[in-house]
Image (cartoon, rainbow, N blue to C red; front, side, top):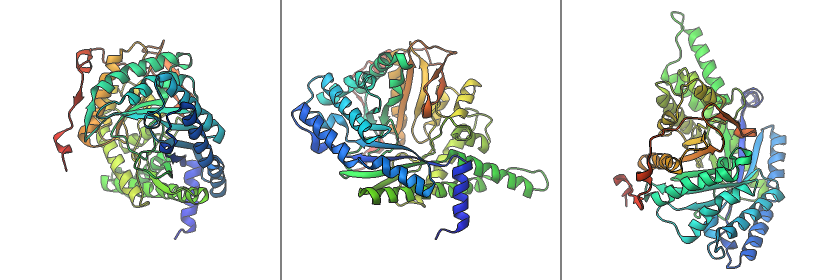
Length: 466
């Protein structure tokens, strides 16, 4: 039973510590929209989205007003479009027409983004998959609210290196197609390994084929709340230690993070249940990821500094992040029976002021970020690199990150932005929640021969569990 102290505590987290529900995402299956006529397919897609999601934004706003809980984004995820357009799309331009339809539907219902302009090609590519992938640069250049993802590997299937190599080219082409806005299209494109079917966060969200016809997934966020709790924890520990004023022990640290994650997740559970009941759509999952924003104090990097590293990237950073990720999950699963999606700590560079500061201080490199992705929630996220970086180098980075996901049986991702016309020493402004980013250096030694080999990297031995 909720008491008044808990109410006051939640109000304080919202007003002073940047607690919010980052997104209500409605997942919608479009499998029944497939048709061998492109115009018919587009009409079915538009009609289904605008029918099921017509009240999504209004409902989110009403819940936010009634409960006093900020709900930052209202979004839609859909069936990977390569599965829907296979019968009617003959050229990449046909998929672009579907993208425009999706964008129109998103604007009609008022959502921030619609994710699922996607293909799942972890073992091989159909012609439909390849056509969609080749359409991505143009689709992202001519739409505003479309997010795209391609899953190139999994623990069960290995890594599709043909798709990895192709995605290096696609990212470069997307950067070129959107160069007038600092290659912003790449910020809406992510390459994944072990992509979950129920992720509510963009740009990697899509509605998996194992899901119901429509569901409500909610992503909560509260880095500022965790940071404040850890600061108060150490103040209390020092005041109680009369001899040397030492910080709290690891045991107390872990308990504090778990308890805080529990409280954050309960807020998301409340919003999810309300949205589900009001929209008449089943509740799917709570994603309890700590997703930072450029706002001061709303930073995963600042949590790592509270744990004890001078800057993210210092020795001990990976261990601190592993501790944080694990305790967030342990606390969250006690607050909801249906935790899913990514759930953990995000480490995007441009969206986290503390990460930006660490890069500018010289503490954080792409190589150290890659090591941190072994234990974080996703992977290399919102990293700006020189625009002249070769496509083969980008493919090599994708391969490395996919290997981490494949071997460690976790989701990993690459959302990297080769900003056309920018080089080391420059900064790129994306605006809004996407923030800004310094251009980071990339290893200049070539991986061309490696990524140009065709075929698939086999699944690891521990994947054979049947």
